[in-house]
Length: 344
Image (tube, rainbow, N blue to C red):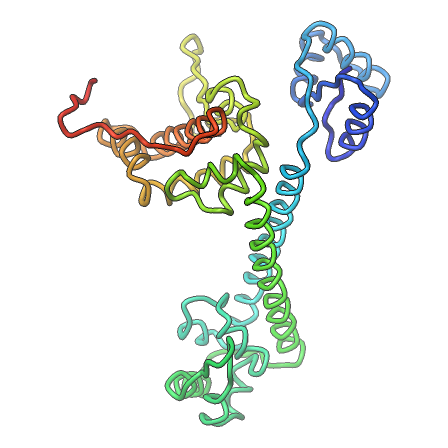
């Protein structure tokens, strides 16, 4: 039996069919769409699509899919929830930057980021420059944040002096209310992110592959959770190359094509969201992980562009994840010795 994965609607149907003993293969909609193009099909209705999916299953014989174990499923849901909340947090932070720039643009010069708990403690009490002109240095300095820390007289005096000559021109109640609400949202979202990070850590302790993934130097609990959320058990893939193809870090080679290289998307297939995440992870790991840094620097020394070296490092990382999942052993990097020839 074959089933097309459309949004989230297929999941209950798939679980119900597997529970009744059916062998079900879940298909990527891109594959069924390309199959329809192969048959030169132009009309698209539910009945025709169902017939096309059935014909695809009959001809291609796709592999059956297994239900994920409960720990993997829970870890996936926790990680995706954490990711969504992190996106909302980033959106609220951008809105806060805009609001502060309108009412007290000089405020940001005193803080490394408005994301800090210090900034979100001060702003609800004094949202705009006009509100700082009505408070004394001593009152502002005594405000407590993050437990028992106080703002201090130096910062308080600096903010009040800047507020006296601020170019901010928007001090009315709607602007102040927006900043207060945004700061409250950021505090609530920050607490939720911390709680979810703890929940993810607890769930990782129950997941064998996730614990082994953390043995790769530089891969932390949240990174391991993201990898398991998207890959499930990496051992289900036939090879590391299959994982790389699934994520989309396999470049296309077209020696027979006449079109020259353009600056368009180099890898249009695969999971673009996860590639973006892996790219950020690899950029950090090439600084922390000697094994991955060696492979990255070797390609850069050979004249490869930075993007090519990063994609190659992403593939190396996926190969390491595949190795620990397949062999169920901690990752042991193998670095060439100083006497090993470069072409060995």
